Image (cartoon, rainbow, N blue to C red):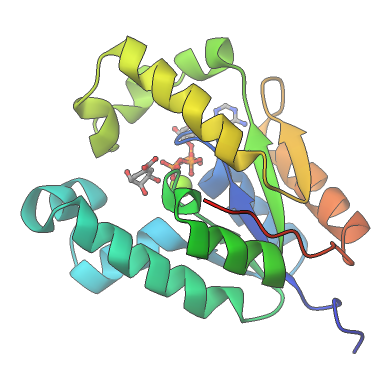
Length: 183
Ligand SMILES: Nc1ncnc2c1ncn2[C@@H]1O[C@H](COP(=O)(O)OP(=O)(O)OP(=O)(O)O)[C@@H](O)[C@H]1O
Ligand SMILES: O=C(O)C1=C[C@@H](O)[C@@H](O)[C@H](O)C1
Ligand SMILES: [Mg+2]
């Protein structure tokens, strides 16, 4: 097997952009194993994300999140959907960029707003913020998601269309160069 043949695909992007939905379909369509990091964290704590934040705090969540991504990044041929905040950690970012093909699922603020009501009950970070603060977070994080090997604009894509694009883009990036980001 050539060095890059089995690289896993890592999906990054703002909460609710569709990493879990499209990632699960992309894995199924391309016979890869699907791993949703939020789900793996929920299994570890045997609690939903919301409850983990309430009971154990965000730091405990972030620590397990980092550890699980590190473990899964070194496995080959998987599709990993990260939680929206995971890529803010520079160690996590660099591990993903070095060992996997990182695909940024992007969305405009206007299109994302249509999902806001669907998300608020299950995303603790949305519950603590005004819409203006959420937009600020969206803009800040977009700058960090800019460290990727490929990007897909999700505004007008169905989950199946997004899944097809993920597979197509990842196969064109098998030799994704190692990009390392600071901070
Ligand atoms: N392509 C799409 N078009 C319209 N709605 C979508 C699309 N993809 C996902 N959704 C809907 O948006 C919501 C969030 O999707 P999903 O859970 O996949 O996002 P996520 O990026 O994994 O979020 P998080 O970062 O919080 O894990 C779900 O209700 C889902 O049904
Ligand atoms: O954007 C974030 O920081 C988060 C997104 C979700 O996927 C979960 O990982 C959690 O709600 C935190
Ligand atoms: Mg998700």
